Image (tube, rainbow, N blue to C red; front, top):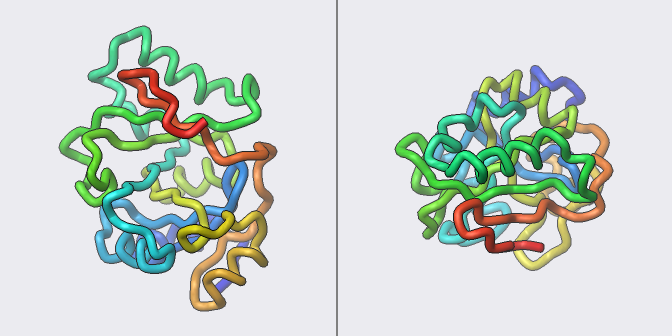
Length: 189
């Protein structure tokens, strides 16, 4: 089903359904991160091993504030700055942060940290706010294939049985860079 209604898309997420939606650079697949059945459906669609983990996407800082508490204040400020001022870069930034007890183990995969991004993409911001929390965000493509860059690409990969939130991609040319907040290591440049 295709919708342009953020409220309808958020309802799909709340009902445990998988949603394809546009992000800053590519289409993503998302679900309620606390719904293990929906999460496993994403892994099945993507043919992705659970060990890899996925990104959590938030629409506002308050949704991930609890994950920033253990960071050194200087690092915390650096992380927040990349999310507040995304125009300083041609790419969004995802940070690997210390996971707390609120993050389901299946989200992290085999990692002690969780990948988190606070988005500035208007549709994603509205979706997270309407859903009232962060959502899973992983590229909309089967493993090994290029990420979908349009609704038609996503439908080509996943057919008409999936729920789609139609809208425009953001202006980034590439998926987010991923940086480990503790070590500074760039995991995906």
